[in-house]
Length: 251
Image 1 (cartoon, rainbow, N blue to C red):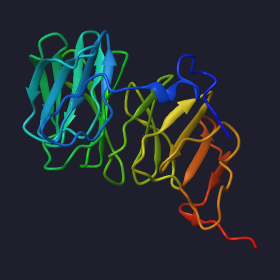
Image 2 (cartoon, rainbow, N blue to C red):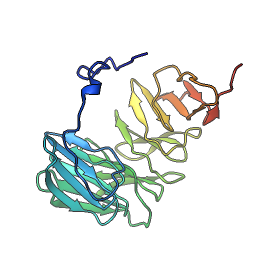
Image 3 (cartoon, rainbow, N blue to C red):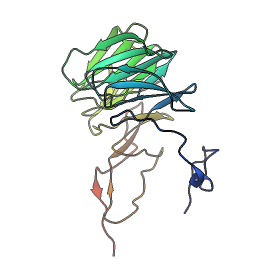
Image 4 (tube, rainbow, N blue to C red):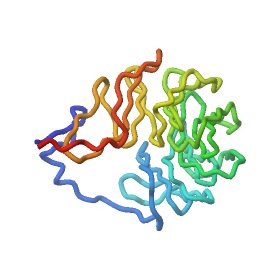
């Protein structure tokens, strides 16, 4: 049965087969995270340590910046600045037009960072392999606060309504202003990035969830990832599915 998103107004099952490659760009190494496109430019990191800015229409390289280590996360672009995290535990702020370094920040711990940064209200938030969530001043790179979780933070934070949501050994909700713990949920540890929509915080191993119901079983012998939806406040489980549960075969 053909399906498509009700929010998609260009592509459909009737024309998607007509898509052809417009251009490609070889970084010379693996690209691990989705690129970001804004104002006619594509920004992407590569395993070779470079961050690239490309012309979205032609794929022509506009500039590149060498971070010194692999870039596994997606850049964030805000107010003329590209924010990117390298695996060497550095965060860089780059000029969106030239790629010139504006500032850099190191967590000063020998741990890898795979978390993509989130930028909101003049603050850059990211997680680190040293188990910390960091908040930096977006203009200067100065640390505003950090919060230590119970495990490495490889997921990317989600920020909404003054709250930073992040998944590590468990799910955390932190004050965006101070980093103070608002609540934690011990049943939802994951490396996947959380999402917040319509008053619910969602954490999933491999897929998104709907607002109020879990995804259906589709085939016998299949596995389902751990998916949890809980309202932001008060903390209460709406539903969850068993992590990697094998669906029985009904004969």
